[in-house]
Image (tube, rainbow, N blue to C red; front, side, top):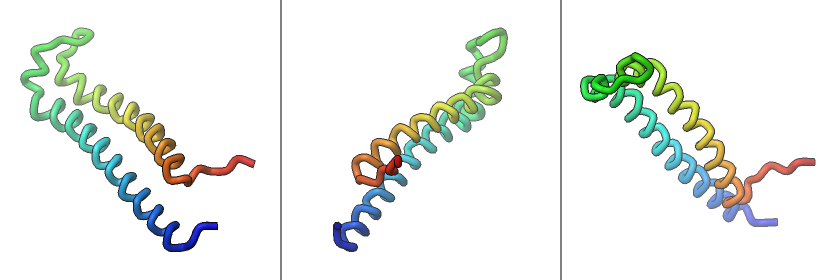
Length: 92
């Protein structure tokens, strides 16, 4: 059994890594939703997607799809992080 100090250090390192992953993924989502839907909408509206302007589509649909993809990416990263720091759930 590992000592309490080592366990606390692993927990702190795990939490820091988790926050880093969250910050990166939320930055991507913010860039896509705010950037594509507001800041770059005029440039993106020059492109048509299914008869709709791309900037409009990104604001209404694209950012939601990106968010869903980021959820799956987060799950994958967290599974790797759990294995790395040995915090995997035990299946009985």
